[in-house]
Length: 269
Image (tube, rainbow, N blue to C red; front, side):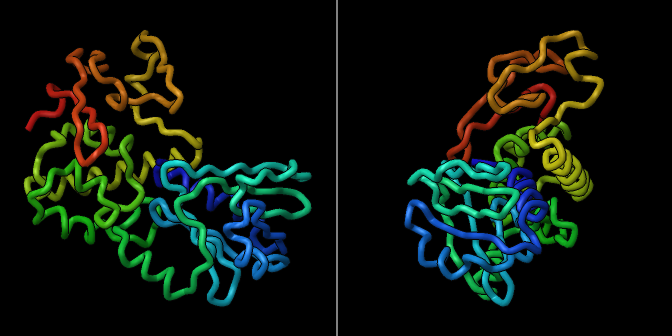
């Protein structure tokens, strides 16, 4: 499932290509056809993200809400658009660009009230400047749940996925099995600031890189990472490989239905 930086990047891409312009909206697949007909020929006013949720604003009280889920994908490119296949749930098109949405968990036309309800159930997002890390801290600081599980709970922190979860805990030497209430406020503040910086880089570069300059392949004389996900990481998907810092084997375990990765030497309880 895409992490929050990907959705913020999509909001940015939509704003750059379609905002303040009239767009053609269609649903070659047919599952969004009625809503597409209502929006076709209207002006897209804004695009924004909160965690893993994308919102396309068409003015008034109408928004297209998109959640990619596990299988959703966006294809964006210059016009003319290729012939649309019957897998395209929603196509946006103007004279210069197109955007094709395939396989999302959610693609629905919603009202302001419904949009607010989505925001209300989500935790603060490190990429939203107005969001307050105190809201997340209020839940973390009194929870017996592990910090690793709390970071993946979108009601606690929105937008953090498996990669950022594993990497920020490593970067701050935090054992993933520590309870939220055992995290110090200074540790949480440092992790929140780090998540915001790392995820901003993710938006900018459209990939996840979490390794500090002194630990990059060229600095350490090690081979670069070869992985479909791209980017240099410390522990994510590196189970049984030596830690870049101490050489201890990176461990993996199932936690909250996702694979957790950590270094038992660098991340002591």
